[in-house]
Image 1 (cartoon, rainbow over the protein chains, first blue to last red):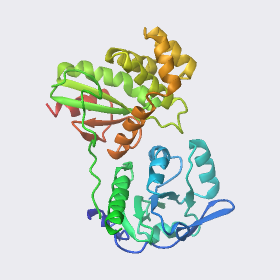
Image 2: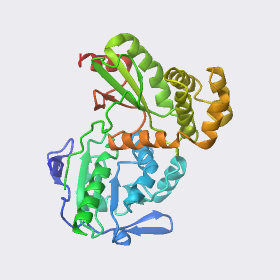
Image 3: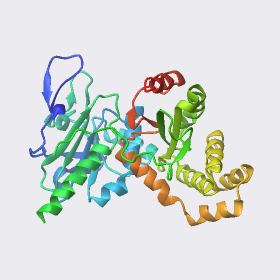
Image 4: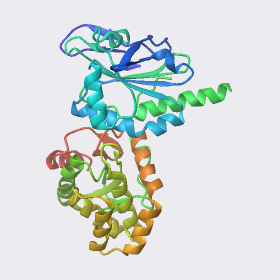
Amino acid sequence: MSENAYRTPDSDTERSIVSVGTEAPAFTLPTTPDQSVSLDDFRGQPVVLAFYPADWSPVCGDQMGVYNELLAEFQRYDAQLLGISVDGVWCHDAFAADRNLHFPLLADFEPKGEVARAYGVYRDDAGTTERALFVIDGEGVIQWNHVSPVGVNPGANGILTALDDMQGEGEEAA
Amino acid sequence: MARSSAVELTLPVDSDRDHIQGPVDAPVTLVEYGDYECPYCGQAYPIVKEVQEELGDDLRFVFRNFPLGDMHPHARRAAEAAEAAATQGEEAFWEMHDYLYEHQDALDDDHLVEYADEVGLDVEQFEGELAERTNEERVQEDFLSGARSGVNGTPTFFIDGERYDGEWSAERLTTALRERL
């Protein structure tokens, strides 16, 4: 798909987002000062991985707010939503409390952006991640990805369509 | 299964279901997904009025609910209240819709009932629907149709079924709508 290769603004380097059909890079990241989450924890269920540039910026707030309202809908697919940015755990903690978020926010904080780099969605110039979405199946394979312009909030329609498609395939296989 | 995410309205405007202002056969349609407690929607409220005035009979305006309940604790109840007003007629819906946006700072249940009285609703029926949560499902149906259509915050506008990502000042919105004429 066209989003697989893109140019980062202010640079000539073309970066590649890990593509659909490949194994999602493994990670373990802190979500709170004393808890961590690994991708492997969710084997057997779909994972929605939402990279966003920063806690507190208005567009992200809306995006995470919309996903938060859709948790029940994601649960219908048995899907786990994970937000991820380069902010630290204390920042995530305050942000999640302020916005009443009920899903884990992962801190890709040290080494900074390591996981984002592994997924090909780190922006060197800004020092943040892209606004990028991945839907990963229960086997750990990426089934859908999408990079939005940083200023454009992608909404949830692509995620829901990807989850529908995966469920459809599962039913066909069964 | 990569599929580009089309940012289009998945639930077409339906005059039997939707709350509509303006002629059914108007040449351009503006759909808003809004939240009664959202300050940005509050800012958009007079702007939409201005745009409606500008375009007159060329515009069909549709309002659908997109309450962000975790952020705005009264948003769902307020949406249900507007739908409860709709049970008593489309005109009652729009009066309630306007009243809610004009009183965004007080949307708890007691105030909702007071507003129902002020816009002249059958308060007993209104209170009954609010207590029974008669319109909860309808509000959720709106919400999910928005999520499926790429609503990414509130307010989100669609012009002739396509998400409008531009600035929503009266001037910009009017220009974008006029381009469709």
